[in-house]
Every structure is written in structure tokens, then in C-alpha cells.
Amino acid sequence: MTVYTATVTSPVNIATLKYWGKRDTKLNLPTNSSISVTLSQNDLRTLTSAACSEEYESNRLFLNRKLESMETPRLIEVLKDLKKLREKVENSEGNEHLPKLSQLNLLIVSENNFPTAAGLASSAAGLSALVKAISKLYELPDSLSEISKIARKGSGSACRSLFGGYVAWEMGELSNGEDSKAVEIAPLEHWPNIKALILVVSAHKKDVSSTSGMQLTVKTSDLFNYRINNIVPQRFEEMKKSILEKDFNKFAELTMKDSNSFHSTCLDSYPPIFYLNDYSRRIIRLVHLINEKSVKENGKIIVAYTFDAGPNAVLYYEEENEKTILNVFYKILSEVTGWDAQKFDFKNQEYSKGQLILSDEEIDYSIKDGISRVILTQVGPGPQDSEESLIDVASGKPK
Ligand code: DP6
Image (cartoon, rainbow, N blue to C red):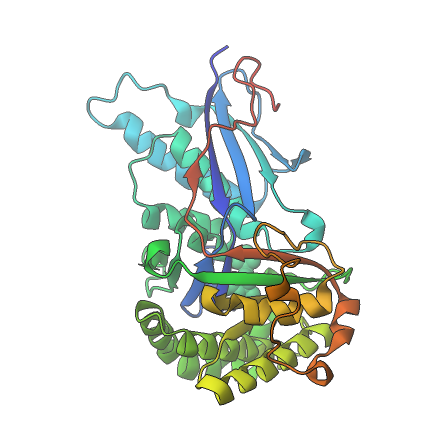
């Protein structure tokens, strides 16, 4: 049997200027532009293989070894768009010899390298990997921004995962969504020393999904209109500038303010949506305390928090301040899993006994009761081709 396959990996991205609100739910068009940092795939990535064959009787999708439906409205749209682009390739002059892949059913096999239980938003990595794997299988000549519009229909934030480094999702103006796409602000190499410490909050019950949470906010929050009309447009320009100038102080301030602004519109929804919990708030307080000390010492903010639709904290900092930041968090969280000795030499005197920016009395040790895991990572590249196929070419089945 002939099986055509392609495999890619795709990253997680964490927004520093949040997408929250849709102006069109079918096309997934946002009410504001957003910005994100793409994270390293060494720590967080989705590996996806896509295959098609005449022998496949239906479309099938395996996520982390579980069979999932491909008949969801979003996936139907995504596949329709990808097939249309493939048809265009097949029908263009000189390509008559190409196999008619657009007419075949698909098998998609996808796996994350991080525990789903961590409650990390995996939809961005998952959807972008699916779209990228099928575009590779179909040998589509379209640009990443073009492909990002298809990923956007699968899950808004997924469009940003098609690029590495620092990424903007331009909201666009057209009602057909043709100008609502992801673009690169700056590649990874421009500002490679941005690191991220993710603090995973222990067993919390499932939050309101982003999709339905943002609908409630759009419908009921008074603050929301103020945010999208009076705050985000200027912030979007300022944040892009801070990235281009590698101005961490500004970037960090805008990131924290935007996380707070987004969570305020959640609280202002009716009934209110609570994504942050008490541990999230304690982390926020601790970060401000670290920054206050640092501003006193050298006038600079050195760490920024941001929270998505859940209580997990993502802290961004520059590599040069890693010891200062990790010393504090290791002191509190040394017992939780995830401290990687290769990335953070916590046995080294310098780290464990180094000068702490906070005094013992200032450190809130109770934070450790609410955190189950840490992930140490950093800014990373966009989707990559992979040789590690999850589909056996001879049998056409998942491995
Ligand atoms: C808080 O992209 O998951 O993480 O488009 O409905 O799939 P859908 O929503 P999704 O929302 C992400 C919301 C956020 C902010 C962000 O990533 O910008």
C-alpha cells in the first residue's frame, strides 16, 4: 500500500499581550491583536505525523494515543482549507503528475512531550503542529503567515505557534479574516536570552475554557470594551518596540499589566470568572517584591509574571538575572519536581547559598503548598521538520 507521510514538531507559545475576545466565532477573528513568546521545544512541544493513503476509509486522529473525533466544526474548517490549497497545487500547470492527496483520507498521530496533567495550554502547539504537518504532507508553497490563518481557525492562539521567537497576531479588519494572521516581530536570535520559569499549580479543577470564557467576557463585561479600544492598541505598539529594543524593563512592565488587565475583564464578567487562585496571587506579590528590591538596587525590573486561563504562572526573565530569580524560587520550591540540574546547578554553592535578593522573612514559603511542578525553559524556534515518525509507513498504522 502507498502511504504518504510527513512529521513535524511545533512549540507552545505564551502570550505577553493577551488574546481575549472574538468578533467572529466561526472564523476565530479576535477583538484585539496579541503578542507572544514562543517557548523551546526541548521542554514543551507537540510531535505530529500526518499521513494519507487510498486505503484509509475515514479521517482519524490520535492524540496522546487516544482516538479523537475529527468531525468537530473547527477541524472540519481546517481540513477544508488545507485540502483547497492542495487542490490548487494539484491543478496548477505542470503538476499533473502529482498524486491527488486532496482526495484521500488522513491519519493524524500526535503526542506531547509534557504531561497533559500539568494543565498547560496545549491547544496552540497541537493545532499548529496539525496544520504544519498536513501542509508539509501536501507540499504547500504558502507562507507561514498564510498557513497561520488556517491554524487560527483551529484555535486562535495556535496561529502564533507557527513562528519562533517573538510573534504578533495582527487582528485584521476584514470580515472574511484574510488579514487576521501571525507575523514575526523578531526571531529567536534577536533576543535569545529570555528565559521562562513555569510554576504549575497543583490539582486544581478544570477552569472555564478560554473559548467560552472569552464569549462571556465579550457579552457581559463593561471593562472589556475599554480594554480593547483604549488599552491594547497602544500597548501592542509599545510592546513591539520594547522587543525590538530588547528593553526588558518595559517589556516586563507591559506583560504584567496586560495579564492583570485580562484577568480584570474576567472578574468583570457576569457571573465572574476566576482563573487566578490564592497561590497565583502570592506569586504575583513575590514577583513585585523582587522587582521592588531590584529597582532600589539598580533601577530595573528583572522578572515578569503572566497567567493564561488558569492559575499556572509563567515568569519571564533575562538570563543574566537567572541566579537572582531562581535562588528565590528554588528556596521555596526545592522539593517539587522539574528542577533540571543541567539547566540550574542547584547543588552549586553559588545558587543554594548565594546572596538572596529577599530576606528570609520576605519570602512567602507557603507558595510551595500550591505548586506541583516547575518547568525551566526559554524562548525557542518555530515548528521543525522531524524524522521521528509516529506512523509506520509499511502498515500505514500508528506506531
Ligand atoms: C488566555 O486560543 O485557547 O491563552 O481561539 O477559542 O481556541 P480559542 O482560544 P485560545 O485562547 C487563548 C487565550 C489565552 C491568551 C492568549 O493565548 O493570547
